[in-house]
Length: 244
Image (cartoon, rainbow, N blue to C red; front, side, top):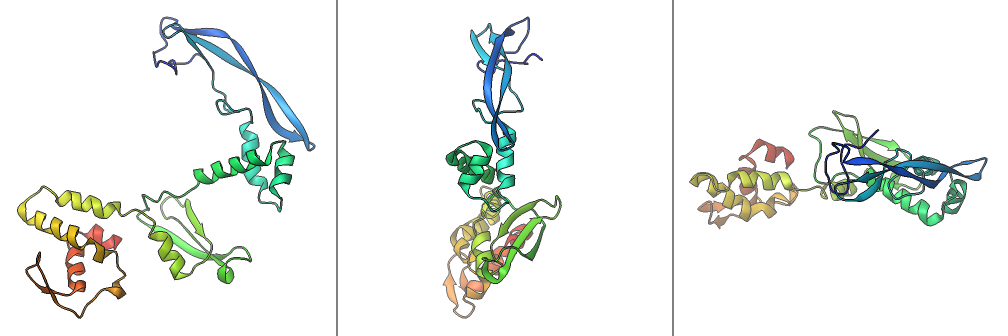
């Protein structure tokens, strides 16, 4: 199958601007057979671009570009990590170095890392018995209620752990609401200035807000406690209130 364009210059393949240019054979590390190192010879088609006078090699689903370890080996390493194996034994089983094993595991971990810029609208969460060394022997798991995809698993269900974890998520939604107010009419600009001045109060726990001391608030032009200020800000937008 001919490529649709040149990956080097981006020119479209038309009027035979890209032609076959021999083959490139690579020696790939394959899944071990009977715990013995196994390799395969992968023959890949080379192409020549007449527009930029460069060559490139056809992609293969069996291996990433510029790599000589088959993707099946990279998939097998995290799966076998479920067994009680040391990194050296795991590397020996697959015929790679412990450094390569560690790098593959780190890469796989990044692929499944949660996106701290976004949370689903609806969450499902529960506690479950995981491993012996976790606090109280119970872990916390939560997922997207719509897709049922697991977002993350926490080592315990303690309130402090949950607060610290979810506080990592971005406050982008509050900033987005402020941007909607900025530059509109005069009354909405008043609310924008209030949000900009009192945003720190919205980051506090409700139990830590001051509800007794009345002090004059310039933007409200009257004495108010901290709790009333937060209540007013939350009344501006239902999404902001839900996030809070």
